[in-house]
Amino acid sequence: MHSGEGPIYAIKWRGNFIAWSNDKGVKIYDTETEQRITFIERPGSSPEADLFKCRLCWKNDRELLIGWAALVKIAVVKNRPKEQMKAGLPAQFVEITAM
Figure 1 (cartoon, one colour):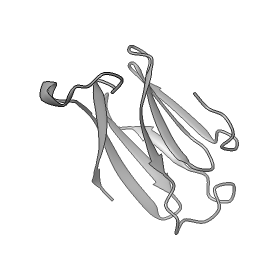
Figure 2: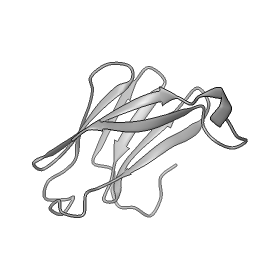
Figure 3: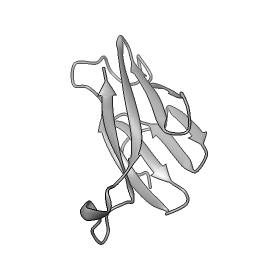
Figure 4: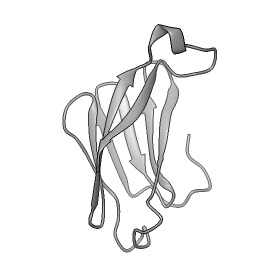
């Protein structure tokens, strides 16, 4: 699940979703399906990850608030429509709804 991307700075668990941040960005994992749903890259303009660590907060079971220095992203976990389901793809995807 995690290797070669620096230390984990924050972990937040809500329902069957685990989100964690490292030097490269944020990953969200679904414990029910045992699949990583997404990777959200750390903004290139943000300060070094070890100086301004990422902050994570689940607003509810599907909305994750991600803070890097002066930037906040709202990531929403959504169910993938049946017509987009393909082998190997997770049943959910993440959409950034606001920054």
